[in-house]
Amino acid sequence: MVKSELARDLSQRTRLPLSEVQEAIDRILDLLADGLEQGERVEIRDFGAFQLSVRPGRMGRNPKTGTDVTVPSMRYVRFRAGKLLNELVQENFLKAQRELTE
Image 1 (cartoon, rainbow, N blue to C red):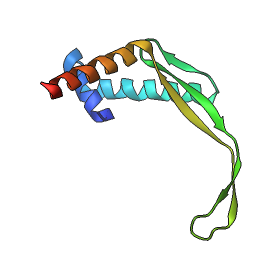
Image 2: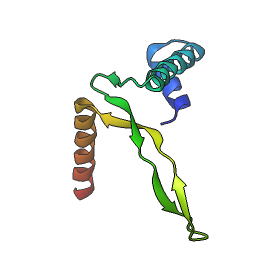
Image 3: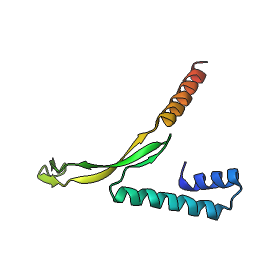
């Protein structure tokens, strides 16, 4: 599912105008990004948590030339699914597995 599909589905379910739903989704994503930029952990209860981590710098190798290169440290976003989301995914996975074997 992409953002436009999410907005369309949410608009249909809530009977809100699509433009308002798109604006709300954009604001939510902006708030999540702002929190992460400030180094905060962003948690959506039952869904999951987003957190910044740091990948330390290291020595790498250019595969084309074989020369050593320095790879700088980087910040990246980690996502850890919440308990409810994990349970839903597992439940749907098991259901699909049962359907395949029948």
